[in-house]
Amino acid sequence: MRTLIRDARLVVTMDDARRRIPGGYVMVDGETITAVGAGEPPASLDAARTIDARGKVVIPGLVNTHHHLPQTLTRNIPRVQEAPLFRWLLTIGAVLWFPLIQPVLEVILRDGYIQSVKGALILAVQLLSSAYLLKSAGFLAIWFLFLWLVLRWDTQRKVTRLLTRWRSLSDAHDATMNTSAAALRWVDELLDPIRTAREREESLVKRADEARKLLATTAAA
Image (cartoon, rainbow, N blue to C red; front, top):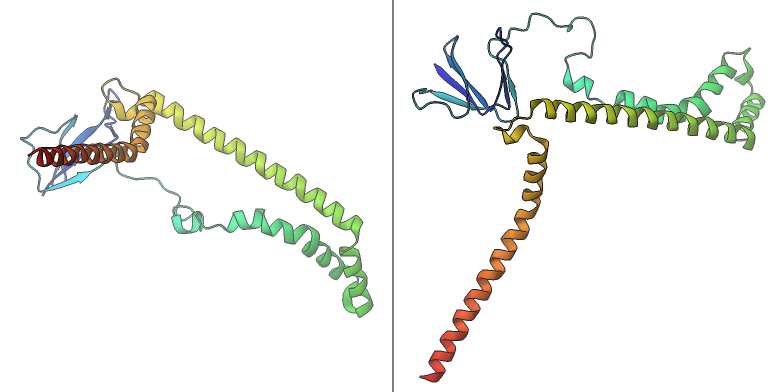
């Protein structure tokens, strides 16, 4: 079966010239790649199936010969990787562990201190004391400030890398790879509802004018 993959954001040929084709297409006949090119596919490329690859990177002939699936339980499993377990541990887990769970475990593991009711009451008083609460609050404030700084740095790094990639892929003949063109296109999409409402109002005004003229003509007759 002949399959045409078209309108790819980028076709990475991996040939000797290391060509990268923005807005390219790939023609596959059975298990053979028969054509790779840019722009609109020729009409002669008759395909039984067409795949819209907009926004995607196509690497013709890529065979994945290297992976780390057996090394960890989470790698290459999106449902596990995207689970909020680590986010929960770093936030809610920290609030529970440092001021409550950790001191309780320390006392339990130290010479049976919590075996008596008196020991349990003393521990509760210690955990609820103002000095201990202030110390825990101060530590948690420093901890969450550290998490915020790490998150801010990581976000800025990803945005900078993405913008650099966009600039490197910018092509005067391909507006989809240009950040300025993408921003203008985004603004146009935001303005579309306003344009539609304005056109509707202008149409209503025009119809009202025509109705008023018709009434004036009828009254004059």
